[in-house]
Amino acid sequence: MMAPVWLPKTLLLVVLLSAESYTIPEDAWCYSEPRCAPNTWLSLGHCNGKRQSPIDIISGKATYNSSLGAVNLTGYGDREKLLEIKNTGKTVDIELASGLLLSGPGFPAPYTAKAFHFHWGNGVSRPGSEHYINGKRYAMELHIVHTKNNLSISHALKDPEGIAVLGFFVEGSKNVTAKTAEAWEEFIKNLEKVSVKGKEEELESTVSLLDLLGSTDLASYYRYLGSLTTPGCNEVVIWTIFTDPILVPPKVVEAFPSELYSTESSNGPQLENNNRPLQKNGDRKVEASFKLHSAASLVSQSATFPLFLFILTLMSFLPA
Ligand SMILES: *[C@@H]1O[C@H](CO)[C@@H](O)[C@H](O)[C@H]1NC(C)=O
Ligand SMILES: *[C@@H]1O[C@H](CO)[C@@H](O)[C@H](O)[C@H]1NC(C)=O
Ligand SMILES: *[C@@H]1O[C@H](CO)[C@@H](O)[C@H](O)[C@H]1NC(C)=O
Ligand SMILES: *[C@@H]1O[C@H](CO)[C@@H](O)[C@H](O)[C@H]1NC(C)=O
Ligand SMILES: [Zn+2]
Image 1 (tube, rainbow, N blue to C red):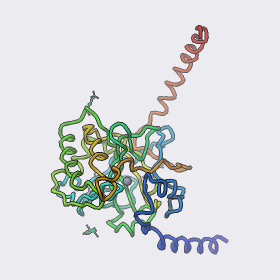
Image 2: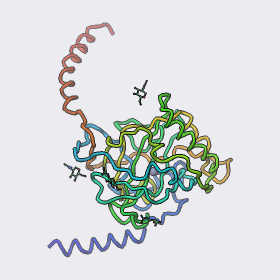
Image 3: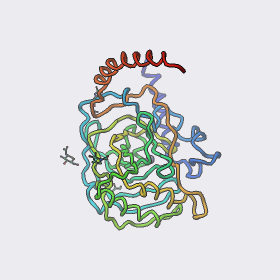
């Protein structure tokens, strides 16, 4: 009974995948013009799917999985790996040399870092991360994009676990370690060289990815299966979202929207608010690599609830 039904469906899926993905024209989508804003993406690629990203991660609904230990990053401390920086009009993308390997619990194979890019809002005043944690949005989000077994991107898009993205929140803060501040200040000097869309420059690398990650705890993260956050929104991504934001000087957060333009001329609009709105989580499982203290918070809730009632009762006696 099952086989004759199942087989044609599989064939159909294979045909669809090879025909469409990765061929969405660059001007078919954008972040803010009504003609091409995110609410028009539903007809593009897989953007209307059920495994879409980003999502608001609710810690109370996540499941602690004790086998999710620290991710293992090999070569990320190498300062020679940042090859080229490009303003795509949608983000700033940094191409990486080969040899940066990601492995660890939950990854079905080793993954190779290919590039990284950012999503941001408009400086410190308007946060622009794509993922949220418990309704909180951060200033920026860094995405390091990896492919399984060093596949090319176009091949990785055909595997439901073909891409692994490491997502780090970036937040402006006065409490920044000198070493991390120095790395980011060095890094953002490159932005002015690619201020307009289409500009690309070789990097004289003086920083490594590890320098940029600072003291982020690589053992504290959420894990879920999702999609690319730009069209075709291919549902091929193992997401790892780290809980510790990278703290950077506020001027770093200001530099992205103020130094980058989304068009080929610097008369055009600034490159800002380049993030996709939240998508439905559906019944997807979000795992946490750390204990969520849900039992503890239940206990404290049960202890404070009577107190809360008592205060409410007292207040109801107060004149309005
Ligand atoms: C990390 O991965 C490298 C290979 O990329 C491997 O040699 C090393 O043993 C791994 N370390 C751990 C702690 O798993
Ligand atoms: C915990 O994570 C490991 C690695 O991803 C996975 O094999 C296992 O099924 C997970 N356990 C549960 C209970 O989901
Ligand atoms: C990974 O793929 C890239 C691009 O195809 C290639 O240049 C590089 O040598 C590959 N790395 C390894 C370790 O095979
Ligand atoms: C500043 O950061 C350090 C280490 O990241 C932390 O231990 C300390 O509590 C922070 N201080 C404030 C005022 O937030
Ligand atoms: Zn991204």
